[in-house]
Structure formats: C-alpha cells, structure tokens
Image 1 (cartoon, helix red, strand yellow):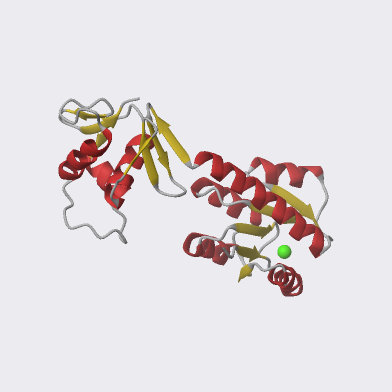
Image 2: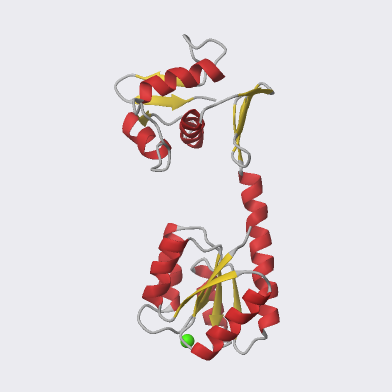
Amino acid sequence: MEQTVLIVEDEERIAHWIQAYFEKEGYKTIMAQDGDTGLYLARTKYPDLVILDLMLPGMNGTELCKELRHESDVPIIMVTARSEESDRITGLELGADDYIVKPFSPGELVARAKAVLRRVEGNVRQAKILQGGNIELNLTDHTCSVEGESVKLSKIQFALLEVLMRNPGRAMTREQLLDGAFSDDLDVLDRTIDVHIRRLRRQVEANPANPRYIVTVFGIGYKFVT
Ligand code: CA
C-alpha cells in the first residue's frame, strides 16, 4: 500500500527537493509550509510519516512535535539546521523517532525514513494480536479464535470484543462501548449494546448463560476478565 509522507518545511526549495525524492521512491507526499498547517494536515490526512523542520513560522517544530506526540504515534523525523547536541536531545525527548541535520543528502533522509517505517511496522505487527485467556483476536486479518478454534464474529461483535480486550479487567460503561465500537462507517441497525453482547457471548463463551470472559458489571456495563 502506498505510504504518505507529510513534509513540514518552510523553505520551498528544500521542501520540493525532499518531495521529489520521496515521490521517486514511490511515496505519496503532502506539504505544509508552516507548523499550524502541518498539524492540521497530520490530524486530517493521517500520514504514515512526518518530516518535520525545526525552525518554522508560526508553531515551530518542537511545539508541533510535542502536540503530535500527544495525540498520535505517527513516526516523526526532525530536520534541524544546527548540529548542536541540545537540539538533537530536545527532538528525541519530545518523541521524535529520528533526526537529521542540515545539510543532508536526500538519499540519506529517505534511508532514515525507510528504517523508521520498518521499525514502526514491526511494532504494529507484534501488537496486532490481542490475547485474553484462551481468546485470540487477530486485528490484522480480523479473525478470532477461542481455544484454538476459529470463531466467526460479525463486524460489530469483533469491534466490541476488541474494545473489551483492550481494557482487560476494567468495567466499561455501555456508552464507552458504544463510542469505542460503533464507528460511523459501521452500518448497524441495532445500537443496543446488550443485544450485541448477548450475541457475542454465544460465539465466544463455552456457557453463554454463565460467562467466563465477558462479565456483567451491575450498574455499570461489562468487563473482560482473563
Ligand atoms: Ca525552516
């Protein structure tokens, strides 16, 4: 799948030079010339990687990095004009994944970008299986198995189980389950949590009448017990 790189750089010449290299390597690029636009594009376009210049008009690179890190795990490579140790440390402390000092060769930047993306993909792959007791939820291919036996779940059942399993031992209110499981693109007629929980239990519980995993918390909602 094509990956998107957001390039936040106010110097047009450098920005285009970086853009040309990434596009030559098969990446899609989006551009911002100031920090505020960069933040807006990161929030709305979900890039796979952000190349972030440190010195920017408006919101500068460090502020933007801090803000982005606060709300997403998108990998960030900081570009700094100076080689001082303090800049490097600031960038990494703020959660940048790597940094590169100007002047650099575009080939070097692309190589760093590939390394960061590979590392992130590795992490994601590892994190993409949720396990709780004998239930295994594979978030990559959307499959579920109970005690090694594959179990068929509807989209909404899968989404509900995912929310529960991401919060093991925590009592989740019906509202939290609604928020977590029902996305706008999910077409569900019945938005009653209890109905879906009942169906979900029939799929994953050995004894749905006396559930072992998806337990009712009276007055609150449900929780996943491992
Ligand atoms: Ca700059």
